[in-house]
Image (tube, rainbow, N blue to C red; front, side, top):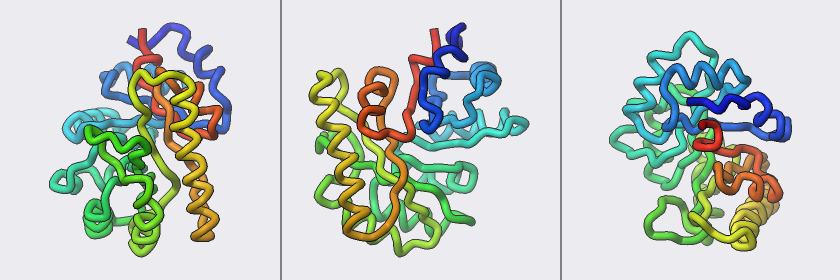
Length: 210
């Protein structure tokens, strides 16, 4: 159930920051409640759950973000229904998107800032080359970088992790003379720290609910 003070909570988020509601916690009614409170961006991490909600909420003007790992063999099911992909984590996926997508898709490259084997993402040292390659694909519109912080990390460690992504984005912009305006980082437990390091998109789940 959506928290009763949702509008008050959302008023604490800077106006220039996009709240992407992680809708794995939400059913269709919850999404309607969040929409009425002012959230229009929703993020799903599972293909089947996304398709179910997408079909049942066509009457709302929602922007759908896919924030989970997207398997190439399932990409065709969602790639022309989403507005943004936060988890572009390989050139093979970029190639697949370029074949399937009808119009350019806003994409974040997912970066493995901490090189955790259990998580997807492009290794820090490979991101520059990945950006170069993605720029060749006409259906890939790179808008920024995305990361997931280490779970239950201390605040000073989170500061370091988020700042790494911020600095990497700045370095890529400078070296390639391109604009990557967005940073997708920060979740319910750590979004306040992410905001200190220039997050533009925060992916909030549990904190939106009771």
